[in-house]
Length: 396
Length: 147
Image 1 (cartoon, rainbow over the protein chains, first blue to last red):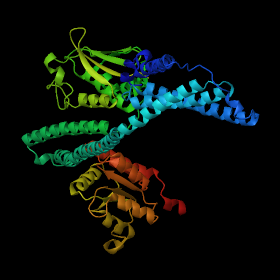
Image 2: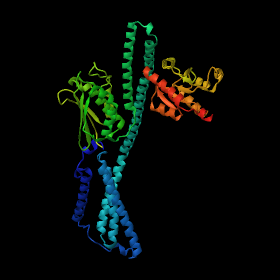
Image 3: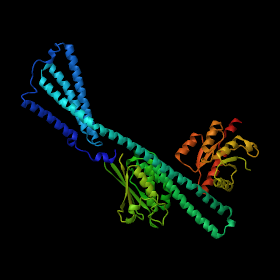
């Protein structure tokens, strides 16, 4: 369940459905008093029970009694179901008087039939009449309310249809854009292959033709191409994080961490980095591939951006509450200067220009978390140096 | 002695030359023959027209197939192979695309393998070596089982 749903819950006593129902009961009671004031008791018995009209013929009596009871019971059940739905739906759709009028209409119809059963044996014709008055009032009110709802419902239907059309359009635009990004990144690779391949061929196959200066220039060219290639790879990763389809499901962060750590083993060993993680990590609602991208990037950044001669150290901790899991990545690296914190998730934003990087990694992480409907942020390092990133995801 | 023919269907002259350089660099036993589009690839395999002279244009052992080519593209060649039951001839897609849709479509059309063109020359060399290793040294073509 997503966090928004469980946070604000109105106590049922405060719901419009409950309050209106109380008001209706009060009105019914008042009606009885009005009848009393007019000298008519709705409980008064008059004349003969209805069974005499049925000539005390048992089959006929039971035919009426069973049918009326079933109709009345069904009506009450329908209106209770309706009330339940309205009660549940008030979180998502605004309370609507038509539901209430409709519910009252059905329930009073039900009581009309119960009265029919009662009068078979007891001549409570005044009471039965009174219930009919209520039913008539509810029916007329519903009929009128429904009539005025027509333009509103038509508007809602139209709006829903327009929303759907717009959503489809946005989806298409997004897909097109992402496809475009993707093919641009791919088509950029072609010429790059040529530059890399032929400069390599120049150096290897025709070394005699190259002066030392020419060889040095070619080396620079190749270094630039290497950077370009890295940029394109990262752009591709970014595009694929945006394109990849997935369903939110239960994912063990422990497995995600293990997979990311596996892929980063070379870097970790090379840098002699220390990663402290109390295992097992909790599970979240997410997607294993996207989360692995997130973990891999955050861990790799922590290891990569450290002061010279510092042993990189990363501590992964987490907090859980009923609805969320927040994971903290705290490192002893170069940290993010205060003034750069707001820009850190921007595309091509490089905080440490002297060190390798394309400025796309955190953008990828941000996009992945956004797609998982989570949150990401960064705190001032608790130890004064280093960075602390956190991600918050729905608990599973 | 170079004997196994590697037919390369590739419209980009640079990519074709890079492949050739890599084959030379690695001392490959493949003899590379390049055609520039799907149409020519089909003509070659069928031995049509100029390709009828099998002494000059021997039957290929493996085909490297670019996907995006003018006229008949790589998909068209795969489709043609399936329709004409040339399944004994391994066709390996060699493309700069790794779009999931392209990969799925290629395999659905019967591609034997899908390789993304490597950018780094070392990776290309490694690929070229493995290609020979796998398809010539280890892989048993349908024709040999018949013999």
